[in-house]
Structures are given as C-alpha cells and as structure tokens.
Length: 214
Ligand code: AP5
Image (cartoon, rainbow, N blue to C red; front, side, top):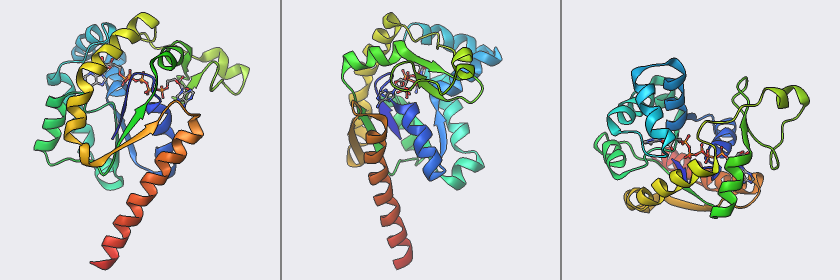
C-alpha cells in the first residue's frame, strides 16, 4: 500500500514500482475518475465529493476497490494499492476480508511543496503518464500540446483535500503500524524510489528465504 497527502508522489512512485515489480497498480482516485468519465451514477455522485475535497462515501468506494483487488491479475501478480484505505472504515473492511499489505509506504512531504506540485501537475491522456511543468516536464512539444489538468488540481481544492487527509490519516496508520515504512517524499523522484526499492527488495528476499526453507 502507498499513502501520503495529495500530490505527495504516490502515482509517480507507483509507475516506477509497477514497472520494476510487475504489481497491479490499483488507485482509488483513478477508479473513481474512470466512473466519472463513463458517466455512471456512482461517477456523478463521486464527483460531487471530489470537487469538495471530501472522501467519496464507502458504499461507492469499498465495493469498487474490493472487486478490483479480487480480479485474477491482482491475485496472481500481487497488488499495489494507491490512496486506499483512506479511513478507518475502509481499513477495517479490508481487515475483515483478511487483506493486509506486506508494506505500508508513507510518503512524507512538506505542505508548501504539495501546493506547488498540485498546481504544476499535468497528465498525458494518451499514456496516462504524470508530468510536472517544472520537476518532470514533457519530453517533446507533441506531448506538451496534449497534456491535461485534473479538475481538483487547484490551490483552493488541494487545501480541502489536505484537510481531509489530516482528519483520517492517523486512524489508518494505527491499523498498519507494524508494516509502516516512512519515506522522505521531498527528495527527488529517483531518490524516493531508491528508498522504496530497497524496502521492497528486502521483503522479496525474506519471502524467498522463507519459501525455500519450508
Ligand atoms: P487521488 O486521485 O488519490 O488524489 P490524491 O490523494 O489527492 O493524490 P494525487 O493523485 O493528487 O497525488 P499523488 O500523491 O499521486 O502525486 P503524483 O505522483 O501525481 O484522490 C482524488 C479524490 O478522490 C480524493 O480527494 C477523494 O475525493 C477521492 N478518493 C480517492 N481515494 C478515495 C478513497 N479511498 N476513499 C474515498 N474517496 C477517495 O505527484 C504530484 C505532482 O508532483 C506530479 O506533477 C509529479 O510529477 C510531481 N512529483 C511527484 N514526486 C515528485 C518529487 N519527488 N519531486 C518533484 N516532483 C514530484
């Protein structure tokens, strides 16, 4: 699992983790945006909450994430949950299903940095890649010309999202305290990944040692 404030770098690190470890990346925010794009009833309701920076109600999110987690690709290759669980009730719903992570990565980023990251973030609708106008600019003019911005990526909205994050994060951390791995997310993208990579490799090593000794 990977957690952190809005724009702390969860999606960016997930791209790198997915590429190296082949885990199935399941991002609650992406699943919700797909519902909005498809114009479903759940999508319409979700958007009202997302525009206010609030958590989308459990009756929409819990089932949506659970169904995705239980699909064969995630069960066979392992999963990487991004932005979920975000509240005690969501964490408890996973515990009730016996679903626990090997590692709970917490990206720790200072608030001024978060605002700048949100305002400069852009997305490539063709590849899904995340860019930043200053920190991770597009490779060429063609990509630059097609970049889009998320509807909740304004300074005003990120402050609301941040408030929601602060209200819920401690309760979620309390469930995963034995597997939390806190990383300084203020560092450059490659340095953050190097830390995460070390932690994930060591888990894999331990797992393969246990498997070969049994
Ligand atoms: P969600 O889509 O999950 O948004 P978020 O948590 O606010 O996180 P972001 O996606 O904004 O940021 P990120 O941490 O992935 O950062 P990124 O890598 O893009 O949720 C949106 C909404 O959906 C919520 O507000 C809520 O309403 C709803 N929702 C979602 N999950 C829910 C749940 N479980 N329950 C209920 N409701 C839910 O990076 C940001 C920028 O910074 C990029 O431009 C990137 O290039 C740059 N960057 C990243 N890392 C670095 C670095 N190390 N140095 C410099 N720049 C960097």
